[in-house]
Image 1 (cartoon, one colour):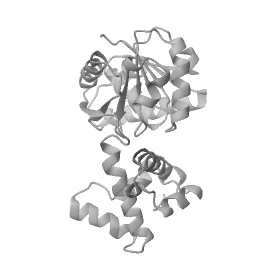
Image 2 (cartoon, helix red, strand yellow):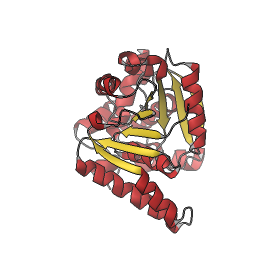
Image 3 (spheres, helix red, strand yellow):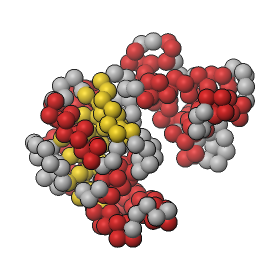
Image 4 (spheres, rainbow, N blue to C red):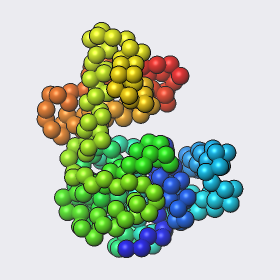
Length: 282
């Protein structure tokens, strides 16, 4: 399958990063959100990120301007052009919202198009239940998208081989490394990462060590680029909790029980960098 027109639904951190990468690789990108303010903010973020690449001499001025011209902001998913070849959903991590979105897109988008979700943990099979399950797949990009090479390619129960092959080839074409994963809660990345973060929060909760000490052990002892509590703040504690709940409910296993401290902090609105305070102040 030849991809030319890509729609990215959701212009937040992941969505604008995905749009950035496709635009840099000469695709026509429709970036979709619910209002102009969100889209303006997303375009500003993309422009600033391209400026950083320009200053590092990673791209030319012409490449920057070409990428920005390739991105067409659209208010409302109902206004996505019918003839797009691929829709990548990057909205918030809620199964019901994703299912609703794809049930509506099914009525709008041409039948040959592939649907993909950037979900970090929710079942691809469940999201695909309301639309073309054989042409539905997971494309889980890593944050920050323009920098991180990995994309988890997740097969739903009914994902066809042709859909998988097309998305794997496309992922390599945009300079990413596709890794094939089957559809189980948390896939691979978050099934391993989030219990580690949750255990670090338990260590803090139980008074084993303070925030800095926990992070330093993992940075200096395990050679991690950042400690698990700093990483949790970067991801967003609400997102961490959502993923832990997906693991806990999906496997029905107490080892995935979210730490009470994590739940309390989310309830208090201490979500990490985006709220100005999590395990650290920003």
